[in-house]
Length: 401
Image (tube, rainbow, N blue to C red; front, top):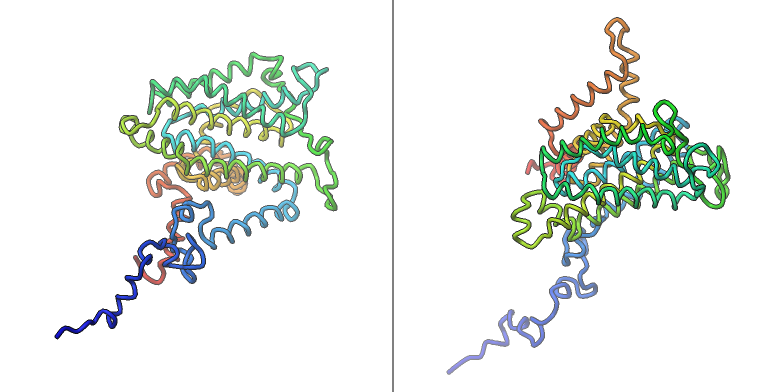
């Protein structure tokens, strides 16, 4: 006698026709294909969720709070701090561009100041008056000259990029360093464009919404000073370019940059076009530098040929190293840190006795060197690495693993 036990086996229910054909996401959560499980916000069922820019509720909430706090800071802080933060935001744009070519693509560039200078003068020429002593075309509409500054500088970067195809490492760094000294000579001698050393020329004149950004205007129902208007405009540009940079980093092009950085020969073997990757790295970096140059001196209102020197390039290198290599967030952290450093050095120098002979400029240079060496030895990932350590500690607390 045989006994049929199939009806009493619990697993028999899982062998219903079509059960194996159901998508995994519907098995996990029938009402939302590809969505995360209820009560498990960090558990993903689709690659698209894991690759999202803001892939956790904590990140989304933090970004919203940060944006709101940054906008409100324009109405709370004094005017000098608003100008300082505006300058810091512009430096963040330049640091992101340098991180794309050096951090992500591994092409060491010490000539970032040259590209910043090109962007500054392109913006000044396009927006300058047509009847002045210097070359100008009178187009003061901010989006126009800002885009032109980025595009023209990107074209200059495309001309310089073939150098990276034959050189790398220290040799490429030395060649790009030569661009700084070449640019200093060109900027000093091109007097119809730059005004010459010690004279300079007015920076790009911004106009937006039908009129120039004056000392005080009403936007909607809010009265804004010139510094506040530039602050908000620069912040919007930074947000847009930061999102663009993050999307580039996580795209196929960004992965090609990383492959070239890690081992260019192996990258070529697996199908990465080295020429395309290296050229695009310099082009994108130059575009960001051009936008940075166009906005940087607009805040001050004046451009001097001696501003685009080796020290400016070193400052951008310090931003990348201190903030974190190959990370957009680190670029922003490092730029904000370096931009606020002169204010800190000024406060420290004011408390040092004059008999020691240390002024704020000398102290600022000392702090640059000490911070770069300290981060390279103690925390190579920079401020972003410190943030990751703190975040991981609290996520794992009270456990140590």
